[in-house]
Amino acid sequence: MFHSKTESFMTLQLHAVEVVENITKKDFINNYYKKQKPVIIKQLIHDWPAYQKWNLDYMKEVAGEKTVPLYDNRPLDAKAKFNSPHQYMKMKDYVDLLKKEPTKYRIFLWNILKEIPSLQKDFTYPDLGITFFKILPTLFFGGENSYTFMHYDIDLANIFHFHFEGKKQCILFDQEQTPYLYKLPNSLMTNRDIDFSNPDFEKFPALKKAKGFVANLEHGDVLYIPEGYWHYMKYITPGFSMSLRSIAKNPKYLAQTFYNFAVMIPVENLMRKTLGQKWLNWKYKKSVENAKQFEEA
Image (cartoon, rainbow, N blue to C red; front, side):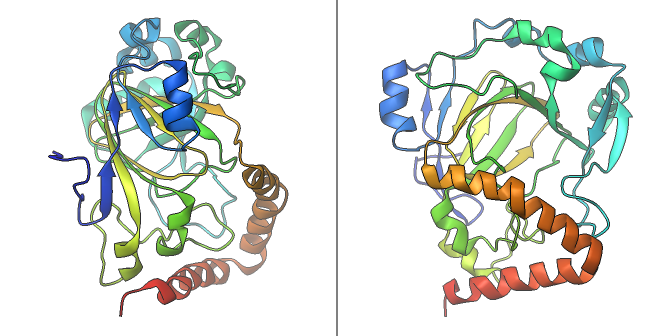
C-alpha cells in the first residue's frame, strides 16, 4: 500500500495517481485535462446500469456464444502481423477459465458496439467537457497476474478506463520518459524483456531515471490516462475494463497518429515478412543501444 503520494513502488520512481470521489466538468478540464495529468475518479459511474450489472457472470450470459480473440505474453513472432491474436475461444469458456485458474490469456480491444450492441444501453458518455469518439468503446479482460506490455496507444488518444470486477494495477509514464523506457524502434512498445512489476536495473539501468505514476483500480473506478501516455496494466485478480476515447488535442500527436497507421504498421508487417527474426532481433538490440546514453555511470 502507498503511505504517501510520492512513495516509490517496486523501486521505480512512481507517484500514486491522485484520487477524487467525484468531479465537476470545470475541475476536470482545469486540473487534469489541460495539465495532462492522470486521475482516478471513484463515483463517476455509480448511476450506470453497468455499475450494478457488469461482472464476469453477466458477460458470460450476454456474450457466451461469441468467439473472442485472445492474447498472451509470448515473445514477438516474426511471422505474425501487428496485433495478431494468439488464440480464439468462446466467451463462456474464457470466463470459466478466468474463474478457475490464473491464465495469461487476455481480451484486447474488443468492440462491444459491434459484438453486443445491447451493452451500450448500460452506460453513457460522461459529461466532462470533452468530445468522446463514440464508435470505439472497447473491452479488455484478463486473468489473475496477467498483464499487458508497456505501450502507448496507436492514436495517442485521451483514454478513460472504467474498471469492473476485481483489482487492477496500472503503471503510467508520459512521453517525456520515453528515452529511459527502452522503446523498440518502429513500435508503440518497450522492450518486452522488461518486467515493470519487478524491473531488472542491472540489465536496464536507464529505467531508474524514469518518473511515472501508479494507479490501483477496483470495481467502478475510472482512470483518466492523458494522451500519449505509456501504460502497463496488470490484473491482480480476474476482471475487465472498458475504455472510452477522446481524440488527442496536441497537433503533433494527430500527425503521429496518421504516421502510425499509414507508415509504421505497413513497414512493420513488411519487415517481419522479409527479414523475419533478424528484424525483431535488431529492434531489441537497438532499444538497448538507444538507452545507453541515459544510463547512470
